[in-house]
Structures are given as structure tokens and as C-alpha cells.
Image (cartoon, rainbow, N blue to C red; front, side, top):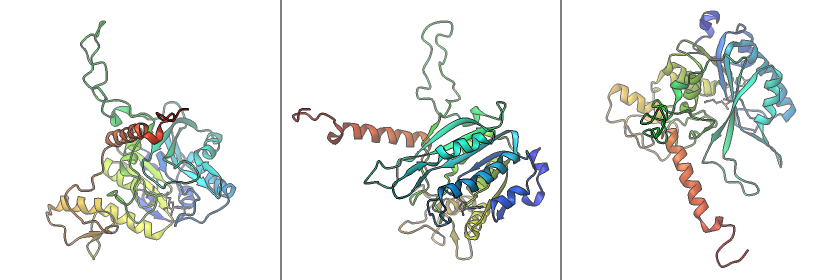
Length: 338
Ligand SMILES: C[S@@+](CC[C@H](N)C(=O)[O-])C[C@H]1O[C@@H](n2cnc3c(N)ncnc32)[C@H](O)[C@@H]1O
């Protein structure tokens, strides 16, 4: 097992420090899956903005180490958004693709992460997606499609002629989720939202973990943030390794993993509070609060439910259909000529 090869004190441990220092301590070919969202160099609270060239040089060094520690059957998922300066708008996957391919890894999918909400631009089209680059070392990488199938659009549809007439024409287990994913990004009204400005949603991480690892496998996140990857690993029976440079985020990650309130009865997010209440069988949660509670009540009811991906996709289709029907979107308006 890959976990046997990793120093015990690094396994299932949130390393507070620079990921380059952690990576150096990991043996070659000891990690089954690397899934991360690195800093984008856009001046978030946790990053010092560098020139694009310096930023990419630093990330290349991290990626070379990631390649070294990845097992031959392993996968790397590198999730990035857009680098912006005064005028330029550079999707970072365009920059990372040649770097990672240059390290000898092979692209399996470029996944578009659709994000229906976000800032409204006034001098360009608003950004509504980010990307996840999935790389492997070889063709015999692990992949477990059945673990991540999603409901078929017409589950009861049958063959109407031929030898299989009357039999289901689609897989009753569900269909391949495809390479456009509609998980809600973690903003203010998402129940997983903590103090971190750029958190992964757990459902997105879970799809990646379930599709590419088995129980007991080791997952690395070199940029842990508030510990979303470890949380998913804990829930799905995987081991984890990872680093985070900011002490406050490490503390939040520890509290998320512990699932307990602090001395003031506070939780890092609504989800942690609700799960605690469910475990303890509490009907009244008035004694507890969560960090991002501004204007919202803590409740055991599913007020701020995280809707599953098919529902997000349906909402997106409804939204685009509504836009298409709106008079402002008609190219040739009746009565106005061409
Ligand atoms: C985009 S966030 C990751 C958020 C994470 N996916 C989550 O769900 O919370 C990137 C994180 O990398 C951390 N970071 C930046 N440079 C680092 C380094 N050299 N080593 C480890 N962590 C670093 C930042 O503090 C930030 O929390």
C-alpha cells in the first residue's frame, strides 16, 4: 500500500508550512491522487502578487515535485481560474498545460467547472467558469466510473427494435458525468463557506476522489486551505497528506476535521454546526453559531441546502432559455427591421 511508504507523522496530518518543504519529505511514487487549487496570483488575502513569469516558475518547481511523488497509476487534478491584470485576461490552464505536459504527464480531461454566479463585468463578458486539468502518468491509471455515475436523462428508455428490443437502452446505474461540472462555488450563501475566500466545494472533490482512488489510497493537496480535501478523505476512507502556509486556515481545517464547537460554541461553517447537531440529536441549536453567520440563523432545518449537481445544471439551462426568450436577446426585433 502506498500509505506504508509515507512517514507516519505526515500521514493524515495537516502540515503547517510551505508545500515545497513537505513535498521534499515524501518518497517518490508514494501518492495515488493529487488534487489541488493553487494560489492564482490575483492578490487574494493569502498571496503576495508576483510577476506572471515568477509565479509560473514557482509553480513549475512544485509541479515537478508532484510528478516525482505521484504513483505510476496515479492522477493529478490541477484546478485553476484566470489571471487578470489591468487589461489582460489569461486563463491559467493555458499556461499550466504546456508546463505539466512538459513534465511528461498526459492530459486525460480538461474539465469545465461552470459557476452560474459571480462578479458582473462591465467592459468584458463576466467570467462564469474555471477549469480542472486532469493529468496521468500512463494509460493504466485508476478510474472507477461506476462510483461517480449521475442519473440518466431518460432512465426508462428502451430499445424499440432489434435483438435488444424491450431492454433498457441506457445503463441503469446512471451515466458518465461528462466534462462540464456544475457544482456551486462556495460563496456567502453556501453552507460550507468559512473564512477562506477560495474554498473547494466538497461535492466536487468527492467526485474526483471517488473516480480515481480506492479506500486506503493516499491523496495529496499541497495547498490545503481550510482542509476540504482532508475532510472528503476522512468521509470516504482515504488517507491524506497536505500543507497550508497560513496558520489561521490550518486552525479552521483542524476544527472542520474535529467537527466540534470551540469554547464559545462557534463552528467554522453552517455545515459543521448542522452535522454536529445531527450527531448529538439536538433539535435546538440556539446555543451555537457559525463564523459566517451574518444575517443568517443557525438551524437544523435544511434552509441552506446544497443542491446536487443535476439541479444546478437544470437551473443553468432554465436561466439560458429564459435569457434567449427575453426581447433584449433577439437579434432582429419585430417591427424594427434589420
Ligand atoms: C486556492 S486556496 C486553496 C483552498 C482549498 N482548496 C480549500 O478548499 O480550502 C490556496 C491556498 O494555498 C495556500 N498557500 C499559498 N502558498 C502556499 C505554499 N507555498 N505552501 C502551502 N500553502 C500555500 C494559501 O494560503 C491558500 O489557502
